[in-house]
Image (cartoon, rainbow, N blue to C red; front, top):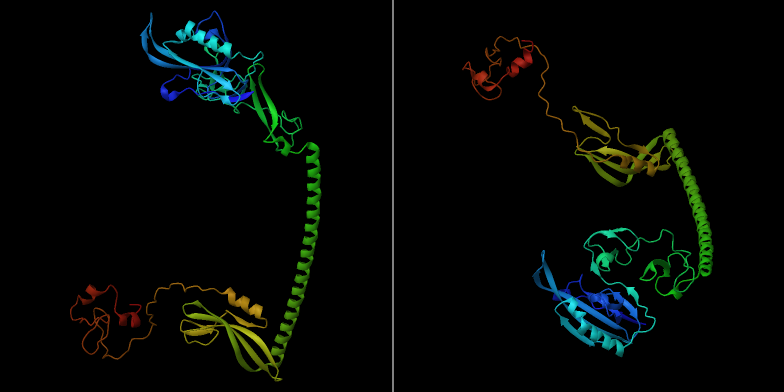
Length: 447
């Protein structure tokens, strides 16, 4: 058998893909209309087929030549070009055995065309049992109308498949590998090529279309069958993988148990050290409270930051000398800023203790208190108006009041609201303000 590729219909030369055809021809009938006289197997254009060496491939390309008036309507006319090709052991011969263009398909299969085909069939007789196998279908003739696929029965949309056959016998089919595949899994099925059962992931369903036996699906290994294991080999491999996974899981469980034991040991050691540190800190605190402080020296200030525009916070390490001349180390978190004493803040003109910070006997506690306070800008407060406390008006009769704005006399004349304007004009206050003067607000609040 020789594998060849059937020549495609030359669409760029105006050939009609629906009226052109190709055959592996085996004989010519005495009776029949046009192509009906041919004996042999029709093959699709562009298809890859297997056929015996010495076979004759007949190629017919039809091209439109114009229109002709018929009895009831106009119809298009076509010419027909016949080309006879020989299949050799190495493939199709480059040079055709015979080619000729005819004015019509009917003339192409007349005495002249049929005689040439018969002459070459005598020179190259067909084999007794001709078996043409389609390895891969070509593009074929596109379907102008929708219809059920002749292989799987699923509806094929217009232009989505190809047409096989002519006239009333024409059928529609899906392109290769687009038909509905079997519902069952391919795993466990015997490979159609090597006969060995297919393991998971090694095979796929392949559609085989045979003009004599119809369509069938075969399980086939992907690529070379020899590279895929048999079910027994696959079972042995899976068992080895399972044992390997169990060993890895057991080793990982041992490592995790060791890591957990190490974590618990470190955590117990850390808790013991922390408890010992707390006990030592309580002892230092009790000694400081019992003996009292004789002196204090600042050792270091490892942390210092601002907490608002007028206040800073610092952590100071101090060495205290107790009354028994022993020394202990403490950590103070304190606020300072704006020239006020450490640990106090200003409110309404006075200093009151600041509740931030304090004295700690463990560095970690002091650091936690220091980190708890973050920078925060002071909230905006509108400026307060000047307050006047009620007081008795001076009883000195020489103190005169402005009859209009209520201010007292001063060197330079009657004044209003520190503007330096004279009150001689009765309308001066009304023009500059909407309230009474400062003196009236201070001494005559009920007025």
